[in-house]
Amino acid sequence: MKHARTGGPDIAFRLGRRVVSAVADDMSTMQRVGAGVAAALVAVTPFGAWSKVEAQADPVVAGTAIEVGPFDVTVVRVVKTGDLGYLTPAPGNHMLAVVADVTNTGDEPQYSSTLGSAIPAPKGVDVVPRDALAGLDTDLDAGTDDGAEPEAEPSAGASPDGEGDGEDAEEPDLPSATIVNVADASNIRIFNPGVTYQVALIWEQSDEFTGDEIPVEVVGLDWIDESRLTLDNGYWLPGEVAFQGDLPLKDNTDRTGDGQGQQ
Image (cartoon, rainbow, N blue to C red):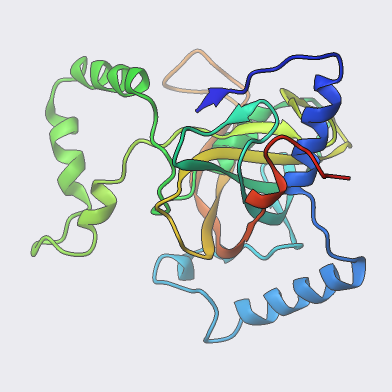
C-alpha cells in the first residue's frame, strides 16, 4: 500500500470528498432502519451466517451498538473501494474499509490503537499481509526466543489428520488497520470522551477476493491495573473474540478514482 500523490491547493477538500464518497451510505434513513432490522432477523435464524467459531461469540449486526472496553462501537457497513483518501492500493488490489461509529464512553482520552487492537484485519479474505520489512521484524523477534514456541505454534491448531484447523496455522501475519476519521479524511489518533466519531478501519485487499461478505471480529478488551510482566500499568489488553459476524460487502470501487463527476 502506498501513499497517493498529492498536489494543488484544494487537495484536502478533494481527498475528504473522496473518503466520504467511498465509504458513505447512499440509503435513506428508512432504508437503513429496514436493513438493520433485516440483518438482525437473519442473524438469529438458522440461515444466518454462523459457524462453529461464531457460535462462541455474540453476533456483530450492522447498526447495532456493542460495548468494547472503553468504546461503544456500531459497525455501519463494510466497503471495498479504490483510492481512499491518501491511501492508494497496489495494482491488482483495492482498499477494504470497515466503517463504524465509535464513542469513547470513559472519562479519559483513548488512543486509536486501542480500537485497532479490538478490530483486527478480517481473516481469509485476501487482506494483503504485512510488508517484507514487517515480516523480517517478526522473524527476528522469533529468533530471540528459546526456539520451543515458534516450532509449536504452527502445529498447535492442526488436527491429527492435517485437515480443518491447519488452514488457521497458515494464516499470514496481517497488518493493523489504518484508522481514518470519515468527516475530514484525517488519521485519527485520539478518541475524546463523550464524542462520537465515524471512522473507517482500512486494509489493502487483493482483487482475487470475489466474495460478497466479510467476517468481522471484535476482540474483548480487559482493563489491566498492574502488569506482572511489564512496567506498564493502566491499559486495555486484547482478549478473546467477543463478537463476530459475516457482513455484506458493498462495492464502491466505481465511486473513487480522480473524483470527477462526484457531487
